[in-house]
Length: 265
Image 1 (cartoon, one colour):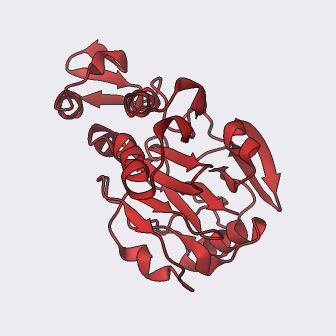
Image 2: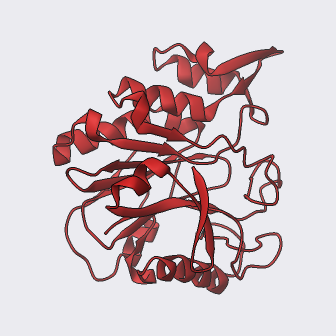
């Protein structure tokens, strides 16, 4: 992925996606917004104690930087589940979706910017450039254990006729294995998947594991049929990169949110 800029917004862009030219997409950083500490400065999360007017200003800045407007920026109320919102028809204002409980958004509508907000969880983007359909998924440990990445791919296939080998996937900056220690209930949730969690969870003793959240989602994408060459992954840990990203664990819960976003042209 490459750090780039649109207007004032600094963001990481997956090279695989950019090469298609069919969408604007990326993963924002914490820079160039209007929020004050500890949300400084491009806080895009509505579920924080930041000034709502500043959050709206940041969201408007993001939308305008890509030629869109605030009314066309779609986010939902994320609840660490696996439900997906599908937007397959035009709408002049998507603000009513803000309170809808979901953890992923899929659309084939051009000009609609969809996004998920994160501050440790993995943001996932999917793009089928052939059928021109995109998805943004929020994958914390619960969503990942619930296979939201696989379900996102399956939804593109079943609802829009996508073929897995045509789908591109990007996993944005998340908390790294280096900083993400979890306990037995988390591992038990992954065991229920029936997959080998040992490939992305390292036992540390005393009922603790270091979890590779990104690796767990990449495994699901591969199992869903997406070729490895179609998957792009950020190796940045949001907890380590204090100057660039928000991190819920590192900052004791009082922090902002970055966004994984995509908008079909």
